[in-house]
Image 1 (cartoon, rainbow, N blue to C red):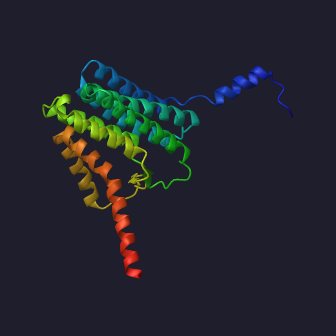
Image 2 (spheres, one colour):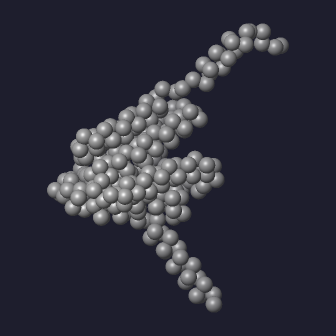
Image 3 (spheres, rainbow, N blue to C red):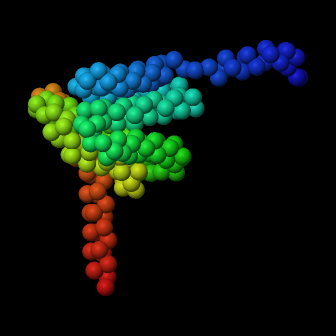
Length: 255
């Protein structure tokens, strides 16, 4: 039997059914706020606050998807909103923070390096969204934008903590910024940690290792976090070199 309700009533009912889930999008909004806060603090020359805000955005970004899956509130709107938030928090914010801190005095090279990072984040997010259904869930293709943002923000944070000024390390900051931008759009694979099942029992040494990681991070957050993300950003290159070496050995063995 056809629905005899007025068309306007049907449209309003459909819109209500397609409403926005509040809980996961609150985390996404909080991550977006942290990214915007980082930009504002960089403009006010409070670079340590800006760097910490980017790390907070990274934590919040990691929570929104998990909350959505746990509460079964995934939506196309949430996925698109998350990508736009990531572009601000992990694309524009780190580029502007490192530019204001170290690259501003380098002339054209400074803003070009910051733009390479920014466009790398945009391309990385676009590629991720279009290949989500076909990619191997165990690996990311290219450095994830949150990890790239943590690498750049970690550099700013740790060097500030060690007493360096941006102009003293501008060439190193420039090289690392370009490295992060290029690595995001590279074809190197980075382990995603998505195949780790937190509901499954694990050996005791795994729990002990996690405790040690928390202890290390709490002992000196700027240095340890920067070191961890630097190692992770190099892991894709190491993995590619190792696979190339294994293929070379196999060819040598069969020839």
